[in-house]
Amino acid sequence: MLHEALKYKAALNRFAAEQFQDCPSELDWQDAAWLHEFLEQFSDATKAFSADRHPTAHMFLKMMMAIRDELLDEAWNANSLLNELAEAMYLKFEKYWTAPSIILLIATTLDPSMKADFVKFYFMTVESAQVEEKMRELMRYLNQYYLEYERIVRNSGGPVFTSHEEEVLSQGNSSSSSGLRGKRRVELAFAQFSSQNSRTRSERTELDIYLDDPRVVVRAGENFNVLAWWKKTQMLILSWL
Image (cartoon, rainbow, N blue to C red; front, side, top):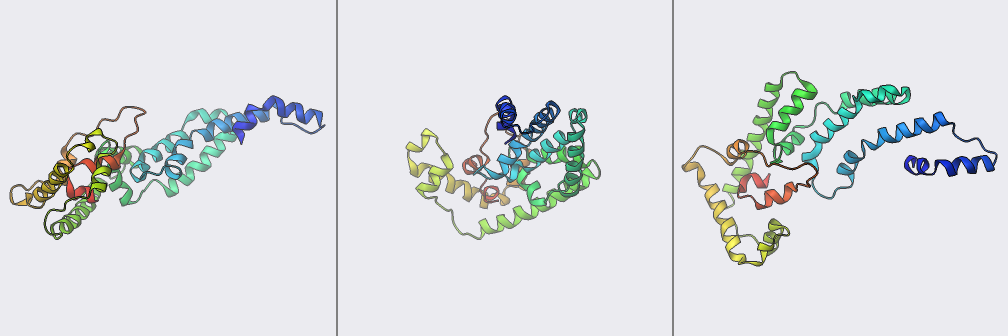
């Protein structure tokens, strides 16, 4: 509404004058412009959590840090209205959002473009205290989840051959989906078989390998599809998470 009002500022002032109505002063319009700029900074976070049809849990920490950064921006000190508003919002942020759920931390870790590095970055930036202890707690929960899903996969019996529909979903819009469908299903089934029998050859789990591998590099502005990445990976146990 502020966006539209500012766009038609001259027309609204003229209409108010013609109707002998009070119209906003120039100072009021300046405050409205400042407020519009302030609120606009949070539109991306709002859209990410409410308008996106894809999973957004992995984006939580990044969006929270973006909101925190905006609330602490010294630019708002130039306007008393926004300074007061930013301070009140930051108090709410500190009260409710500085200690996110362990599920959201795990979701961030399972984003291959961020992994545990971003969680540590979050703790060091937002909380700063007991970072290593919090990271150990995250790894403990992550390992517990992994072991539970590993048990489910191992108890599921033989290799599971995916359906054609699941295969198409895993490949997204890739043109390779027009190739031999059975080959892809065999590859996925063999990956699951290898995962189920890997402990006899190595103590390194899929989780260890995933965390040790380099993060996926995402260019600025690129729309990285985490779900599609996990559907294509051969880490069968982790992909269940």
